[in-house]
Length: 97
Picture 1: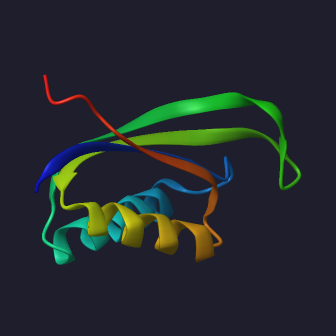
Picture 2: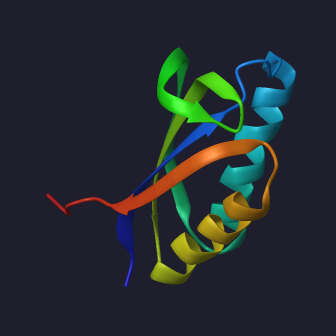
């Protein structure tokens, strides 16, 4: 069953624009290769973190919305967890309104 999801992840604020493009494409490809469909990727500006994470007090937030089977969400979370380019991530299922 295809469901809508949101993936919010935080990237190191010192990351260059070229590297940000590579990072967002990397996670988009994880979803697409698993049979999902990415609806939108929004890169937010640099923002202050609520608390220090891995020695950083700021981060670049990226919000990706996608539709996929539940296994895709699991695989995306696994890839983000083992990647060094993501400080924190959160993947949630959206309401199907």
